[in-house]
Image (cartoon, rainbow, N blue to C red; front, side, top):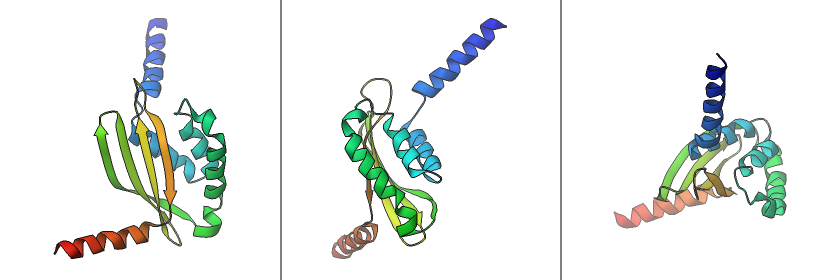
Length: 143
């Protein structure tokens, strides 16, 4: 019986440590973001072993995100816009994040130097409408 519990516990820890995909990490970010944006940002940056070097930028990001409910209204969820990868170890995920007033673009870049995925970069942008207009212009010129 002890053998079963030990192996089950070890398997559970392995899934937590090594089973995290970029999609899993991002999903957890948005789950946390719905109730506490600062916690979500802190948690996602824990995947980056170099986040101590980014403390000032992380704190600025948390301050900006903390004002989203006041400036943008209620958070309503997220939708994947695109997923791009240049190798199996470097991936970009872009999401439209829905608020009452306007959508935002959140871009996550993940890097996997060995066995675990790390957040490499996280960016927020309010220019989603401008990007959509640029895409429409490109499509118009192709026709």
